[in-house]
Length: 539
Ligand code: ADP
Image 1 (tube, rainbow, N blue to C red):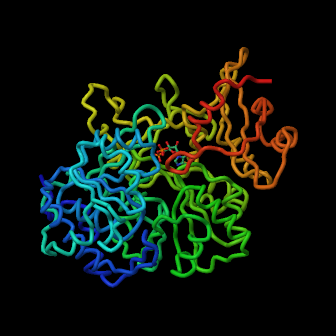
Image 2: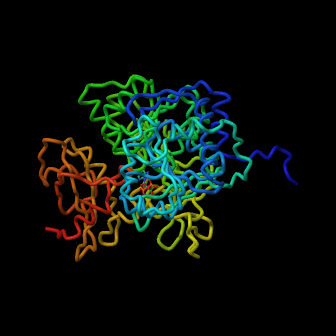
Image 3: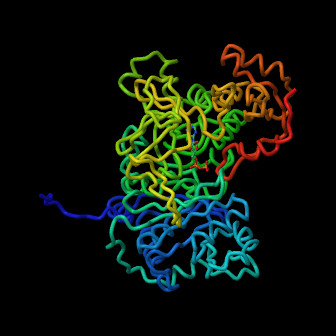
């Protein structure tokens, strides 16, 4: 027997409809790519997004077409995504920090018909224009007055102005594709994750729950994580759904610019990768700045160093909420929110739980297996491959017509991460399976050593990689970028680790470098570091 309730397709356009109807005057503030701070509301964004849908129709766009954006977080970018998705086309957010050859691959692979680009990113496109024949139009996300001299791209504002604001969104199946985001291709070619309206909808509901992000209409959210990084962590959906004031930083993610927005807009909640928060912390310390309204920072993408979490809490009274996820999971998989059991612990133990990658929300199922696929216990010790399943986890990659099955027989996706889960359900990533160091048949966690090293007062960044060893197969070496003006020795860094890690985990060498390369999503690029050290021999 079927239930007798309304069948209301869970499509993402409903979030902006809701924001317009019930939070229509709520502000959306942008540090525009052109320079000035601009202000709009959810009601205005809604009206302009409808015009975008009409403009797209005028350019011949049909449901299912891929329309790309190459832009920073701005109100225009949000209305554009809704305009694309609302008409049943697919919003493909491109990461401008990728290498040109990766962008070329991704754009052609996705078959993007139109690319909307910020003016500061037009040169990125100009450099590859001849290699992306699939693209029919480039639209510059600005008005006529700001189009760079000689630029042939259409001006976004002219398109939007001309288009009618009457457009009916939705009316299609909730499993229709809505968004496309490629993984940054740390192994092999980038892979496309094709989100559906339904997966985005359910992910948003999970995000809004109190033990995940717990956003509400009284929050002011600064969305630092770019919309092109892992579905923008879903903030473009969650903020209008909750009716939060939304602040968008545009291109400027340096400590001073972020601090200014946090204070002038009264931000209560923000989210992004650790490198951004390291820059903010350094800026606050140098400038003797304060955080008068900020309460919580969601940090993910790579592990939160303990020194970062302590710095924000002890010096600025701001809590760090540690989250783990990936592009393939829409992206949030776990969050380290407290439970009744952790609240009974002493402060240090509470810290331990808060620094783990956390527990899954409803709709996420996690399991740990060994190399033979056998399930491992949740005892905080057994370390294995982390598998995940749920309605916002990838089923197969975009355009992958091979017979290769991504999921195991029970429908689990292998995250490529290695982890433990303790008896209270807190998951801890010990490494990515391709970064873990296998020494004498045992595993050494590169992440754990790196997090300890960055607590050293002289260290700016640290990376630990495995190098070949005749007897042990692999041994760890530590690569350190010192803070400006500092000098350091191998002995002092090894002494700093003494007693904090098992003796056999101690790196065989410490190498000081001028720069540690960061990848396109602001994480340390281990693949590149391994390449740089390909000819390195242990002392
Ligand atoms: P990419 O690394 O290609 O930019 P993703 O953002 O999808 O793409 O990366 C997902 C991976 O990032 C995870 O599989 C995991 O290895 C790592 N990661 C994400 N969040 C955390 C975290 N909180 N702690 C440790 N690793 C994390």
